Length: 297
Ligand code: RIB
Image 1 (cartoon, protein in one colour):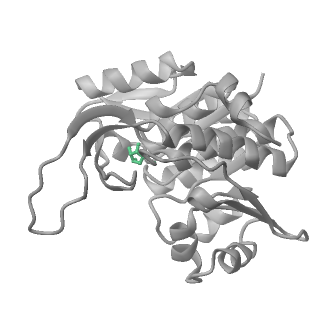
Image 2 (cartoon, rainbow, N blue to C red):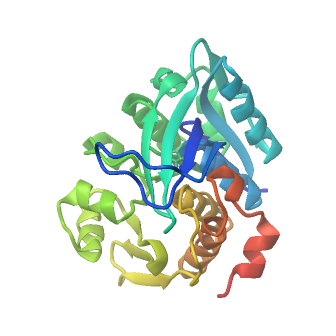
Image 3 (tube, rainbow, N blue to C red):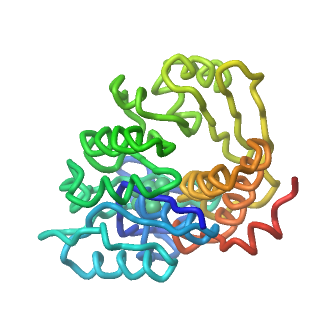
C-alpha cells in the first residue's frame, strides 16, 4: 500500500457562512457557524488517507478540546497520529468567512503549530519509510526545510504546497521535487501574473510544478516537456475551503501509484471537485470509491 507522510499544521476551522463577507467597518448577519477540523497539513493527510493511502501525520495539537477533536478526526479518516504531538496550550485555529459564491477569507492563529520548528526524534524514520512527503507552510519554515531535506536524504519525493504564500529560501526549493502553488502563490513566488509564465519561471528552482487554477483545472510543467493543461470537472461550488489540500493529497497518492501525470491530475481534480460541492475542509473530502466514480480519464 502507498504510504504518504505529511508534515504540517492542524487547525480547528471556525467557519461563518454569510451571503457576502463584510467590508472593513461593516457588520453583517451570517447564516450559520460551524467548527470543522482543518489545517492544511491535516487536510492533506485526510485527503490522502481517504484516497486510499496509509498516512502518517507529523505535527502538533494543543492540550485543549480542539486538539482532541483534531486528533480524532485524523484517526477516523485512517491517518496514523503517533507522530502528532500534544503540547501545552491552544491548538491552531483558522477563522474563516465563506460567502454564497463558495469563496473564502481566512485568518490563521498558529497555536500549537508554532511549536513544530524542528523534526522530533522518530520523524525522520517516518519520512524515510514513506513514498512521498507532503509539505505546506503553516508550521515554522525551519521544520519544513528539515522535513524536505530528510526526505531528500532518503530518496522520498517531496511535494510542497507553498501556502500561505510567502517568499521561500533556496534550500527549500533545492529539496522540493514537485511544487503545487495556486495562481496567487505562483505570482507571489515569481512576480509573474501569467500562471503559465510563473510555472515556467519556477522550473529554474524545482524540477516539476503544478499550478492549480481553481475551476479551470491545473497546469503541469516539467523541465524538457511541453506544458500540460488538465481541465477540472464542471461543478457548482458551495465551499472551496481545502480544495487545494484535497487536490494535493489525492495527487500524491496517484503519483505514488505511478499513474501517468495527466491521469494523476484528472484524478486529483475529481477529488477536489467533489470536495467543493460540500461545506467544510476535512469533512468534505471524498473517499476513493467516490473519486473513482467521478473520475473521467
Ligand atoms: O487550506 C485550507 C485550510 O487553510 C483550512 O482548513 C484552514 O485551517 C487553513 O489553514
